[in-house]
Length: 121
Image (cartoon, rainbow, N blue to C red; front, side):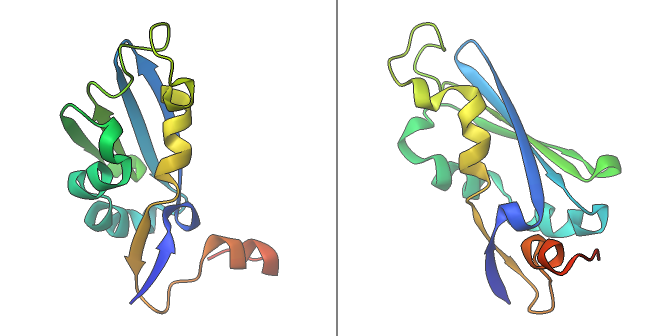
């Protein structure tokens, strides 16, 4: 096994509503959904977001599209219009998610290497 950043296997989208945020993690290749499902857990997400995550974190699975959706409650210090921590707005949270280190098989070829070689899996 080797460790790679999540951005090598998936992309993310996020948004906010009031004091909560959602972060979707979508596999580039639906065949990699199993890796995401095993590696991107509520515990891993809580550890990644650390002290800014004060509420519950819920995970929803969407296997038909190779995606996970995380709902982070009480994460935006009152919401975008009330917080002084603008960098922690819902839109910025997906960038942090992409830094999550996950374990993949040694044979896994990272997206950055595929793109550099002009190929696809």
